[in-house]
Length: 142
Image 1 (cartoon, rainbow, N blue to C red):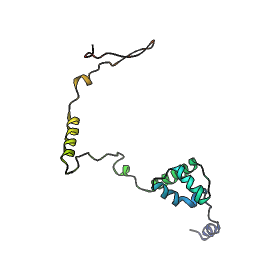
Image 2: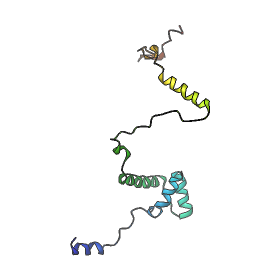
Image 3: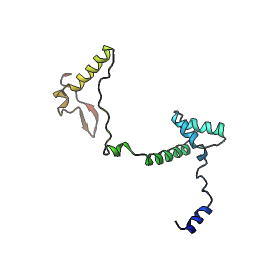
Image 4: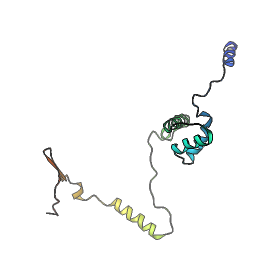
C-alpha cells in the first residue's frame, strides 16, 4: 500500500462502539450460554452494571452478534449439500429388557400397514355454508 494512504489510515482515531452494550458483550454471551433469559439479563445489567436497556434492545444486540458469528463459521448444511438429516433412530444398547420391549413395540407400530379404512377417501365432515359444521356418523356407530 502507498505510504500516503497508510499515513491517512494511521492518523484516523479508532471507531467508537456503536452500542453501549458492546463492553458487556462477553458477559451477555456467557449469561445466555448459561440459560438466562433476556429479561433476567436486563435486570442483572441494571443492578450490577448500572446500565438500563430494554429487552428488545438486548435481544437485537445478541441476534446481530450471533448472526455475524454464524456467517464466519462454516455451516453444516453447506457441507452436506444443504440438506440437514437427522441420524437414524436405533434402539439404544440398554441392559433393561423392558426398554428393548418398548423399542420392539415402537418398531412394530411403525412397520404396521396403514388400514384400508384410514386410507380411504371417506368424508368425516360435511360442509354447507348455511349449516354449522357437523360430523358424519361412523358406519359402526349407526
